[in-house]
Image 1 (cartoon, rainbow, N blue to C red):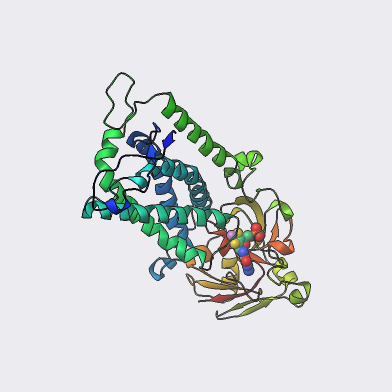
Image 2: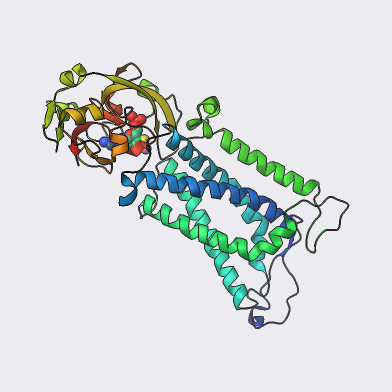
Length: 395
Ligand SMILES: Nc1nc2c(c(=O)[nH]1)N[C@H]1C(S)=C(S)[C@@H](COP(=O)(O)O)O[C@H]1N2
Ligand SMILES: [Mo]
């Protein structure tokens, strides 16, 4: 891009600013065709990210009417939707930066405001850019569990998603004629539209470079949830095989304050049914054991399949005299922490694959994986796979 620092200024109500120099942009790729070509990919990534984000939100925080209706199948459902959420959100970052580079000369358009509709359109673009930047970068920092802001991540990330979706729809409506005009590539022989470069080596190089950047970011991070790419997993915060018992850990026993002293005299209580239970670990291990191959799929984007063994929650519920179809509240012996208490609707609680797991990948649970007992259920976010379980309450 070549930039000069002075451009003649027409007389306008802003002529007080007449002598302020404005940059003039003669770079050939800041045109609507490039903006449209990049916008298509960015729009696709944001659409997938938005839909999978809604899935994640409703699985984690279901409203009352949905609570007992969430499906426990397919077992890998959340693994796929959350893997896509984090992968498309990550890919959106280079796409968004390239899109902003393409259009930023319009920041310096003169006059800055031509009419009331024009002012509103510029305002909506400001909201769009701010929401998009906040959304993708807060999501990126969440994947590394870094929260350098005073607000709580989940409600803000969720609310800004709607602001972004609304601003994006408005933007697409306002730009519909230009998008339609620039959707397809024009071959070198045909006439370019006003203000537009023909597709040539410049644009091809820019778009190819952007494709390489998106591909590189995706290939070096998607392995955290898509196991075939695990050998290329260089930039993701987690590697699927790294951790005790070949499973990553989000919160260690030490971080949760689950010490050997806290575990002394541990037993499981099942309350709220006709025949409340109180079981020691040897008593639990003597009950009929079941096995399940299920993933931990963390909301932060990593996921791994594992082999779990333990007692079916539904067997414990039956023994405790719980009415069929009841829901369960699971309480961890962890004292503080957002994931100490977890509610489970009937479709999960009575599913034959939902276990109070005692063993992982052929050995007793490591302390960091929830020893002596933890929940593992199909098609659920990792945050709800409660570790260090102390009590099940029939609801
Ligand atoms: N009691 C309790 N259970 C918990 C957590 C926690 O902080 N406390 N973290 C959850 C999260 S966010 C995830 S992703 C999984 C991870 O399980 P793992 O550490 O065994 O891989 O445990 C979940 N269970
Ligand atoms: Mo998690």
